[in-house]
Length: 251
Length: 228
Image (cartoon, rainbow over all chains, first blue to last red; front, side, top):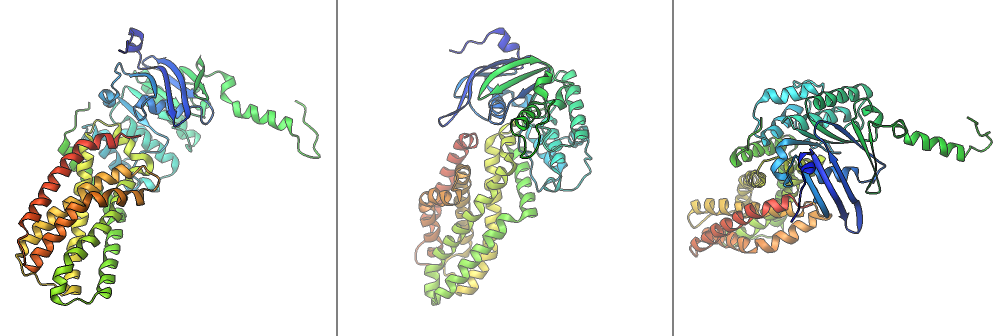
């Protein structure tokens, strides 16, 4: 029998000792974390750290090999699908349909048949619902924004976002960040997987760092040392290998 | 804000969406038509039957051509759900999985029916066909046989869609399980065309086959959809 305590039930998301194997490879190795309602949580880590896998496990797209996941107070994730939204690495949209057609279809899956809800969601992400171009002809950044609109069209309490800013220009990314902050202030819990931590630095409540499938750090906000890890590594690498014929630049 | 969507509402929505996607891309219908046309033309060059012989072999040729053409189309209809991982969006929604299965089956039924409407006149011309038995029964056989092909095909295409060699995997799974239906549709068509035997037994067999596999498909589709 699985025993759940009060803290677990009050969390928006609770993962306990979650392990996920793909064949013999362990993508998640005993992750435990609680995410309180109404916060923006940023999941950081290098490629292959297990961030997207964790998000997919929380969304119920992957079953954990071991451990328990409780979403919005329920271990049966299927029972709460109407209460959370998921934006994947791929846009989860039909290329041959326009943004509005896509949103109308996906909203209908949630029992929403009101066209104005879909138009509002498209406007919220800064696009024009009257745009007749098919999604396949959109830029990558526009696709990302429509994908976000699809994830929020049913006004979820919990939002799971996997790399929402990839290929999005800085101005649009800042608009998206403001939208996320507004949603957080209205009570939505937001889990974001990203490599662009700096974009979320002004609004993030906590950051969680994963490494090789393990949770290695959890901190308030996003500390400066985590904002530019790659830049720091690049600097180190450049210092270690000066180009032939060049003097090593001293700081 | 959200309410539980009904099976029929989502089936209708998904069917309209599939028809719209097919109208814009024409992926399935073009590949089916091209393939079936090739089979008919090549067979007509390969054989030179008399009118009597035509009536005996036409059922087999027609349904084999349609079966192969259907397989070509079935993968296409699921492929568009895998592109951009759209299937994940459906899995994350409260929509009943059976609605997606029904919509896909109905959509494929329409595509294959369109193919038949276009191919049958060609068959009649190329093979100089005249039915001796009641022609209306051919319509019943066509409806039941088409449903038998697509209901199984849609289910097994969904099952094989995540495998690496899905184009080979689908016929490998689908053809053996379709043998009873293929036997019934070919024998029923031949019986009607030649007028030798009543086709009633084969029509009943097709009806039972449809009923069984539609029920099984509806029951088993949810685990297939949610398979990782």
